[in-house]
Amino acid sequence: MQTNTRNTPVSAPLDWASLIGRLGLAAVFLWSGYGKLAHMDGNVGYMNAYGMPAADLLIWPALLVELVAGTMLLIGWKARWATLALIVFTIPATFIFHAYWSVPADQVLNQQIHFMKNLAVLGGLLSVLAHGAGRYALVRP
Image 1 (cartoon, rainbow, N blue to C red):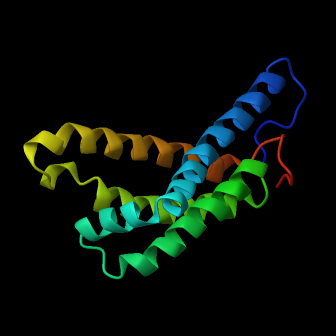
Image 2 (cartoon, rainbow, N blue to C red; image 1 turned 60 degrees about the horizontal axis):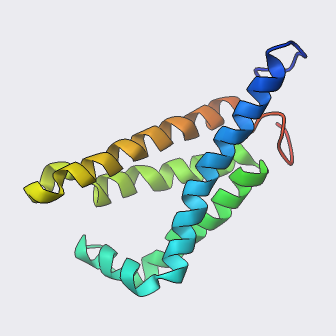
């Protein structure tokens, strides 16, 4: 359901805000997926350090979700499905890799910042899930 379908003095800025927000969210996942591809060994090592079984295999679905769903979100094609995939990916990743309550004291602040950042990203994703890709999308709902 599109929430901003009338041409009012407010609609154009809101349409642009929706686009910019969607592009910002997509950038987070595209950058992360690219980082996994470009620095595979370091990322597999990071995953192993957190006890991920078969990290050398699990990195592939992780980077594919980030790159494919991130691209879908970027262009606004099936944005709600892409957003749902990114939500399902982000929730466990947040609790596995940014569990600030279980790290050494010198790492708490850094992991807490990443945890809270991911909560903010989840909020943005939920907004896209609720309201769709907006006016400036490849395919509008």
